[in-house]
Length: 277
Ligand code: UTP
Image (tube, rainbow, N blue to C red; front, side):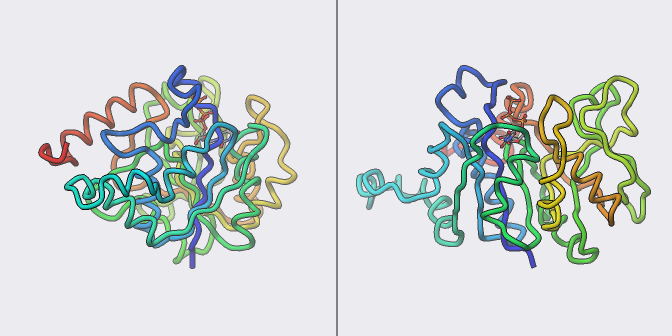
């Protein structure tokens, strides 16, 4: 049973400077909802209700977003504008939110280890909200939770990318054990040109078993001097089993300007009734 979703949101978001100088990247809106709102909705769609955030300095806006705003709500009470807050109110009613801080930004693996205090000794999901995943059917995380229930091991989401883009991602090698599901045999973080073991790139959705914390504790800094989740996952795969799942759906890399604009156009055209905006 998975109840908790960890959101590492401590990164600097340098690709969006100057916007991210005083505002978390995760609060950038795709049309009228911040990225992190979509992430929480996806986690809820997978049956998770305990949202745990690893934040950093300058990220208070995220905690405020997932709380009541008395003055504003009082002001618009009884007007048509109240409807705009329906979605976020429903999230607040159904979920709990907890926060801890990563004091130094030493990488994704380091951020996840900082989240141990909120997760404890149980399997959990990790969602990077700058990867926006949309589809018509079951959400990506829900697909992964189903896979976890069957196999009881860590599951990571992967996507085929063009060969020239593999150097931007963690890339896996594996044996396909059922359509779209690979048992991981190798994994390299941001492989240099010609060194990628495949074109199957890891994206920001994971279901992890809690032994990952012990592995992260002894994982040495890797690529760019950061504690890399990819390195810890490879160690976990070597000790036992890690599955990589080629998910159904569409992913937008909202950590980059191009992906962010693409997602905005897509959502504007496909998701939002025009009279609402
Ligand atoms: P990224 O490297 O994509 O995000 O990290 P970034 O550092 O925020 O953005 P750029 O590259 O400077 O533009 C992937 C995810 O891991 C989190 C980030 O918040 C993001 O969600 N992260 C990364 C942490 O929480 N802590 C870290 O030390 C590093």
